[in-house]
Image (cartoon, rainbow, N blue to C red; front, side):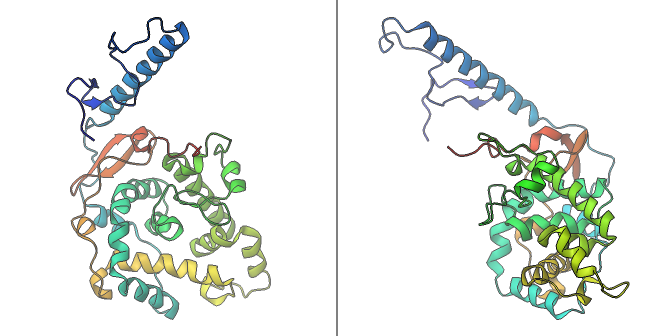
Length: 307
């Protein structure tokens, strides 16, 4: 959109939302009401404050002493699950991706935008790096994704689980669409599931089909039975293998005849968005890890309900 030369800017950010910050007496009503004048001033103040905050968030902070490595290297170093390449269902999921090369290309910008810092959160909590790939399976790494059952956000949390882990869902806000808050809630939930069932693949199954269902499946099962030894609902039977397949692909794409999109091959990630890590969050910037303000991940208004 072409901006007129007299459009005001704050910290290099154009302020142009249809609220005149400079008035033209020839076009102004002769006697604007006090309420209207106050409203304009208040909105202008909010815009200025927001623009200054946005400018501050773009400033670099000192580089972390954590390894200055690319996202893929950090991701691979954090892999700890058995990707079960001996299982035909995992190989079939890998083949699905190989036969649809455009799929990862479409997801690549969102993967670069969100996953590096999500993986930092998983690493900081001592979780396997495979867990940070779950938004690929759940939502295509889309914070605005909505399922037919009403699950929302990167992690596709249902209302009951979201509220259980402290997310606000009201008439004007749904924090399941907030990448910061939803990531924290989802990782806490997954950690609790792993503690309950003692196995990450079972925790992932419970994330998909529910804790009660997993408990019922395990009831009467042989001691030490793995995910692949048990009978699951159709969706869950493919869900865990799909995550393991993506992990295997990121671990060694060439071994599976898959070429990662250029951005991922170069170990880059968009520097504009990251997920909170207390008090800072790791993100990738052209092949190195640095730390920035936790609040800088927030996608403006994604948590606000559409009206």
